[in-house]
Image 1 (spheres, rainbow, N blue to C red):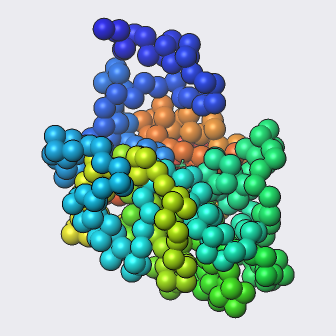
Image 2 (cartoon, rainbow, N blue to C red):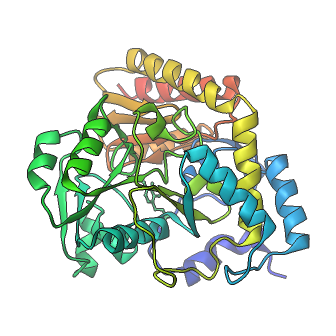
Length: 391
Ligand SMILES: *Cc1c(COP(=O)(O)O)cnc(C)c1O
């Protein structure tokens, strides 16, 4: 056996593909909203597994579901029916108010599937996406992702994609025509800097799509499963997506994605799409346990209230000389600085708080929704102190 406490860093550096920029920290264990490094130091986790850990680390209901299912059956491709998958698909469809679902293994895969379904259903080829939008790193998903530094090194991408400014209806209206299969959009742009949809915007987007015979793909990979204070963020905007992309926190941290399919999407041909791992019983069991916790506890209601309070507080408390804007919905929070965010991320880590960025100047918080009030306000006080000390 390797002595991993000594060798993790050297081993990873020797064998990494090189595509990840890693922080100088070896995370070994998690519990609730805490992460522990290999020296035993405890951190409050506002990275939340990059949005995959809405119910925190080692949640007992999810651990039990995974343990039970692992002993029962892990592999079962969709060549066969499977009871736990059937149960989960029914529960997810009912929760979303939609009838059909395709299960896959990641956010990018859910976007790939949604784009294929939209083209097949409409017989049209082009897609409209938004500036600052992020939808994943595989070719289809990357083609509808805005950030040029992700795109340019690997072009050419899938053709027929147009980008319009987020929260701008005129530009969307001007871009729509009878070649447009779908508009793909986030409810809160996450990676792109934490920009929430303005009130009424998504309803108007939906109306424009319907008038034009285009489908509306809503990407809730990051905003789903309680993050913004409702099970799905779009429920606060009063819209009905035609295709709803889900992943990240869907299965308590296990890799899983899903596309929910609405009534305006035509029947999809057998063999149009598939996935070997998609819908495997292990992730379905974890996802069912996750959904049950979200539905049977008050964690989502709490997220709504606490998110509103925290965002309001930060807007008043943070020094204007340092902070341009505080944005967010629920516990998806972005603090846009006037300066680069990376040094403050490091300072917060020294203070025992782990956070993300969203672009070069935005600090992003994605704490587990189960974080205690004491820890949440401790995080807020630490951010205030770090940013105020820097004035
Ligand atoms: C993270 C993310 C994706 C990509 O998910 P992966 O599982 O990393 O492929 C897609 N869309 C949004 C909105 C995301 O936040």
